[in-house]
Amino acid sequence: MADLEMELRRTHINIATPNGIGTFGELHVMDSLYNGYASMYTCEDMVRDYAKDIADVKVSKETAIPMGVYEVVVTMSPKFKRFLPLLLNVENFTGVRIHSGATPKHTDGCLLVGTRIQWSRYFPVRLLDGEKAEALLMSKLGKVVGNRFEPFYNKMFLTVVIDDDAIWN
Image (cartoon, rainbow, N blue to C red; front, side, top):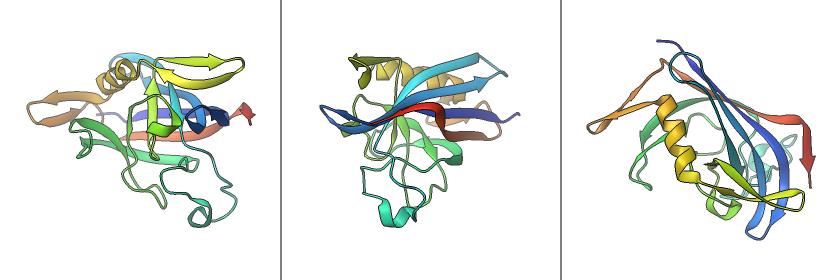
């Protein structure tokens, strides 16, 4: 089995929305082995000053994860009662999942996905069609067989970066 690489590219950072301050971006799934390339939009919490120690700047359930490369596994989420991607070894974070949602208020430190973004003037305010995006992502990662998840890949990785042309608010 091959490895799967995903990239989260942050494009709009710390944007004030009616539902809190959020960071929006794009998730790219490079699935050359099975079903081709997939892309969707993301919403996260506020990006903090990572030049400092993350333990000093993190606000629980209101801070985006640091940039880096993370291994991803798919496990049953006790909170959502379904199989979801889980990021491993995120410094000072636990239980960081990728799932459907719409606004920064829904993140609680997780990565939300949607197929579209609702815009207000020049800034994103919320994700749309989160369930479709989550289903698409899961179809790229593997399949549910009975009460277990069978991944298509040996290992899965997510790289989190800030786009060179990112808009900061």
